[in-house]
Length: 206
Image (cartoon, rainbow, N blue to C red; front, side, top):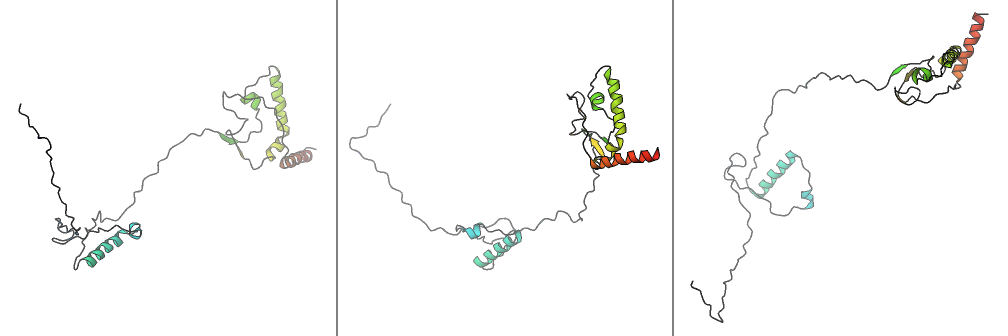
């Protein structure tokens, strides 16, 4: 295989390529799409770095088009900017669609009912049983509620309904419920109603 022998002391010199700087010229672009700017019309391109006043300028679409047309007229004599026309989507008058409302029936997780004056939550709702004493206690509680019916009916006049939501006396089935000891609350309206019922009963049944 032949080999090349380089003599000792030989040097190689690479010619240096000289680059001659040329001045930057404003580019002239000839558009090929007729009807946009115009056949044979030069387009002016900005080559300067925009300042904050121009960079953060907020214009509408019409103002932007007018500014571009003004710049072309000021930079080039007789130049005219032609922008594409807006496409008309429809000439029909807008009519809103009137759709029927969608109705959905949702079952609530609570029960609302009128006031109960003869309720025994310990035996009827919680299911407590005291054996042979239960019937006697139920009868005593019934007559107690019957005698104080005017007091209970006239107290809390602003409450016309009761709900199971947030009421500790109306626990859901299967929930642990403590034994509740009844305690009467003092009510001025209830006292007036009870007094009126007693005095009226005395006059009606002397």
